[in-house]
Length: 358
Ligand SMILES: Nc1ncnc2c1ncn2[C@@H]1O[C@H](COP(=O)(O)OP(=O)(O)O)[C@@H](O)[C@H]1O
Ligand SMILES: [Mg+2]
Image 1 (cartoon, helix red, strand yellow):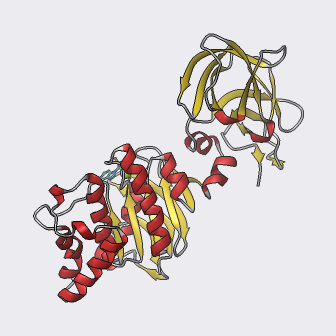
Image 2 (cartoon, protein in one colour):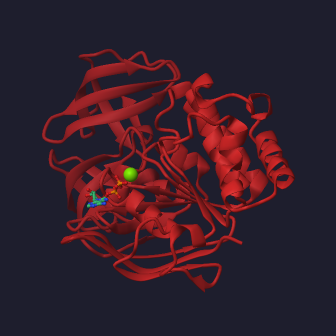
Image 3 (tube, protein in one colour):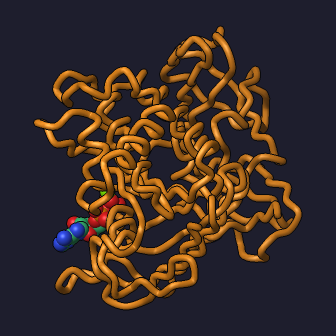
């Protein structure tokens, strides 16, 4: 039971309007990821759902019940933060069972719940340790365990992995994905990590200064961003964007150096294209030919699995190209660039997508 309905949510801190009319429907069991630039209101939105923060206006409904006026303890949700906030003097067992103890539950019942959660998170052997005797990843697992024990209607995560080192983040990310499959509970997860968003989410919600810019399945946002903000926010390295002028044909345009480009789509908005967009992996490097976009390779980054090429194109700008494997292209070399029309995008002067791929 974890359906969350948000209706026209506004939040002002004194005069500052931080959340500006958010409507969102979260289905039972869904894994929702909030992304957006720092300060856009992701944490505030999560706190408004949890009840840690009061809405200025709007409604929060959980499982059909209006909880807008209720405090955090009455909403039946569990929140996991970036800082684990474990009690240092308590063992893992005591930390995990503390909420149930405060709720007046009997000891055998608490023990059973703690053991069950410890089992899910493979914390069994650590139950008698104190937080200082554990790694960051283990502590974060205890914080998640404490949330599981409460059997919440939904889990709210605020950048839970951002204090962990890279290897541990990957491991915990996979554990959270497994946990979601296993518990089948609603999860709302804030992150600024592209990979976490793409891999964990059933649906990503992209925020920008207190608004939702777009929401959809990860690949839907990746392949069919509805505007320039989402196009350049989702994906790493970023989508290349270049000013352009609309040509006569819909879907056709010319870059500032005169080169013709095009973007095939199912439909076009009818507005004039002002920006052409192509993701780094959708650009092919060729021998330079008359009429093609050509430039000089400024920097080559060999990552082993992929190579990133930064190509300086006169009157256009630096274009990032991602090629699989180890590239033989050298710094200083002159190359041609081919943009794949089936994977390219056009945006109008307001940044709205001209190309629609359904
Ligand atoms: N308690 C508060 N009082 C005043 N301003 C706040 C408070 N909490 C957050 N803000 C402001 O609200 C905006 C959004 O913050 P936050 O939700 O933390 O962003 P995010 O999590 O997306 O980085 C920021 O400008 C922040 O300074
Ligand atoms: Mg935040």
